[in-house]
Image 1 (cartoon, helix red, strand yellow):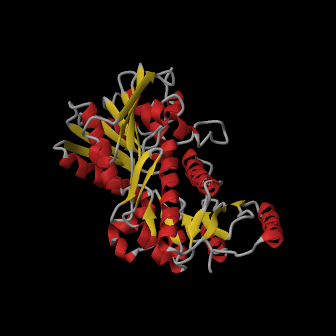
Image 2 (image 1 turned 60 degrees about the vertical axis):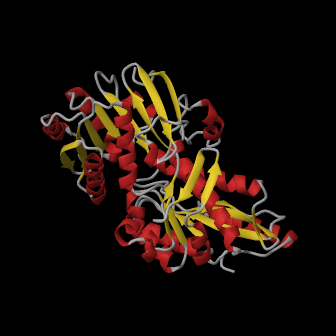
Image 3 (image 1 turned 120 degrees about the vertical axis):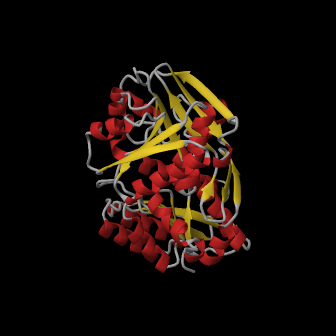
Length: 419
């Protein structure tokens, strides 16, 4: 079997210790099967723990979600197949945000018999190609990871899954939530990067604006290395937008600060910032910052009581900052769905059968219902955070289709981050 080691007793323990020693010296993160299980089923993680895209809160939160789910599944008895019980093992390899290192890491996981692997946000195409050719299930959240599902359809990518929905329905959901909160919004603009992801998101904003009967008043595209957004923002301001979607990624703090200073629009909307990042933005003035997430963005000091225990399970990031709970929860839910699918398929290594069991499956977890849609992306509770000079509020909705209705949960507190 590709991903199962059937060793018992002392021989299995000795084997585990030897492998653990090898992996520690190689600088890799791994959780191995323990005695009492018939074997292990490996889930890999092409982590970006260093390099240009490494060490970010998003990357670390992603891995945290996978690790916590694996630990919980194992502690609750593991994965049961034909009377045997298997443990989920986890192995993360630093891809260093480099294509060559990513391919090398993917090949290591393939050689180790991984049944599934997390795609990194960097070098996704090369990583996915290597995993796909070796019949390993690949899953991820970034648009580059799920773009093949959008452009080619799931039939051509049967082993690829998105842990969040494709960008278009998520962006429409975010905009619907903004309209539900601020019905006076009529005009929408975009500031985004010149890369394919920026163009893809701009098209999604245009489609969402048309859906809700809003006027799309144009976009400004900037190079990923841009730090001065004043010209682009001034051009957008001349079109009198009510809301600007800022898709500038790593430069979101600089873009937001400058948009506030220029009073470019009353509402500044992005998917990158966390409430804790408001400390680095400064006074908000007349602006309202809308921080969206692909899932419900619970965070320290801003979590409705009914979700506090679930959000706390991810702990804190290594630097002491809050985990991005929304993205961690998406991966956490997917691992639970994956474990269910392995049991339903009755196999630890038939990834075709496991993928078939994943499709249109659902999981009722601590964050609400999560399900795999026909296009092989995952839908679940989604939320937006609204911050103005005095208050910060989180609204939580069951899914992207429900954001124009009253939220299922809401929580407000004084905005002490922006002082």
